[in-house]
Image (tube, rainbow, N blue to C red; front, top):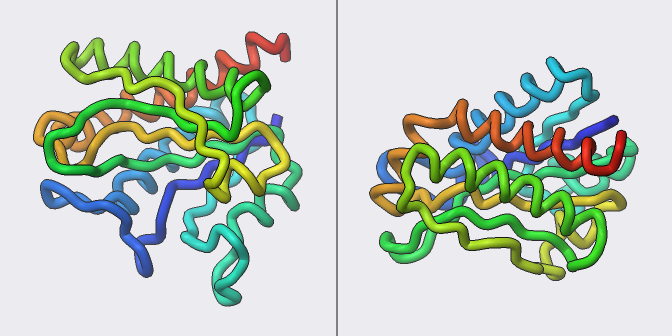
Amino acid sequence: MKIFINPGHDVNRDSGACGYDMREADVVLDLGERVKAYLEQAGYEVVLLQSDNLTGETPDLPCVCDEANAYGADLFLSIHCNACNGEARGIETLCFSLGGDGERLAKAVQGRLVETLQGIDSTIPDRGIKVRDGLAVLRATNMPAVLAEVAFIDSTEDAVLLKNNRDDIAKALACGISDFYAQKGE
C-alpha cells in the first residue's frame, strides 16, 4: 500500500494557524514525519510532502494533489491544526463525501484520534466527521483522502496536547490508517 502524507501549509510561505508559541506548519510537519516512520515500520510505502500549493498555481512549488496522483497513492492523509476563537476545542476529520472509502477512512482516523486524545484529556470534544467537498486535497486527489484537524492550536487545553503528545497523536493517525486497511481486508 502506498500512502501520501501532506502536513498542511508550508514552513517558509504559509505557516497556517498559530497559538501558544507554535506554528501549525511546524507542528504538523513533526506529526507527519512521525506518522511516516510508524507506517514505514508497518511495511507501507510512504511519501511525505509539505506544500501549500494545492492547485498547481504556484509554479516553483510542487502541487500536492498532482504529486499524490502521480505517485499512485492508495490513500491520502492531510494533517492540520484547527484554530478559531481561542475557546473552541476538539478533533475532527474531513472527507469529500459520505458513503465511500473516504468516509470509512475518516471514521477510522477520527476514532483513533478521539480514543487516544480523550484517554489523555477526557474533556477534548469529538467534533466528528465533516464533509468538505470544496477542499482541493479532498476533491482533486484520485484516492481515498482525509484531512485530520487534530486539535485547536489556539486553545489553551488543546495546545498542551499538541506540545506534549505529538507521538501519541502520530501513533493514532498511523493506527487509523492501519485500521482502515484491516477493515478492507488488505
